Length: 265
Ligand code: LHQ
Image (cartoon, helix red, strand yellow):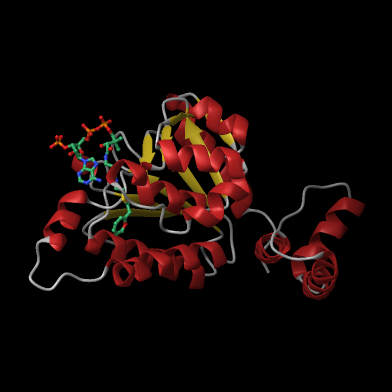
């Protein structure tokens, strides 16, 4: 992973890679370069065994405000506008890489998350919000449909009724409501968000990383499968998990009445 990006801050520490989107003057709205850089960083994290947990965050007061609308407006007036579905393919690739990341990904959300920024957070495995965060499926306010996989992830997290309400009305959901609906896993005071996120990320980075990857695969497949399919997949994945060093370490630690020391292998 390269050390510097134009629109990202990256920090790697004790197996935790923190990627911070860094366009605070526009609440971390996506331009093309930030999207490309985020995709590169996430792909690199997926390949790097030294990274055992990833945090996605936003600089300044927001997590992210979606597509940069000034970029969108100039794209509309370009001589040969790029079809939006072609542009969306780049976001789809990012969402796919996040979703298939073989280690846990946490979104740390201190402020507003709108549009495709929110939907990218929904593609992460866990979300921690500050009590000042708010969540807006902003698309209908500008006459668009939810994109970036939001229509897939949102109803799975909050149920179809609430997802429809959020998508149609495009109102803010506050952090307390988001926690109640399961849109975020935890809501903490703003001053505690960074520490709470790091504590969770360190815990995950010290866990059985290969099993975590298999757990993600199992649950994300199971949510769209029938029971026989899940039985077959869990057998296949348990055959893999039971051969890992971390499984042996977990059992040994239990029998020796000591904390496990997982290598991630
Ligand atoms: C912004 C933005 C922004 C540029 C704040 N762009 N400058 C669609 C189509 C095609 C391809 C791919 O994907 C998409 C997906 C999408 O994401 S569509 C949805 C795009 N996002 C939005 O519609 C949200 C637009 N932003 C807002 O509604 C508000 O800014 C929110 C609710 C996020 C925050 O409101 P406030 O806290 O009141 O902040 P603000 O509005 O005052 O914004 C602060 C600054 O950031 C301001 O600039 P200024 O120079 O006045 O300080 C905004 O213009 C700028 N900004 N979002 N997306």
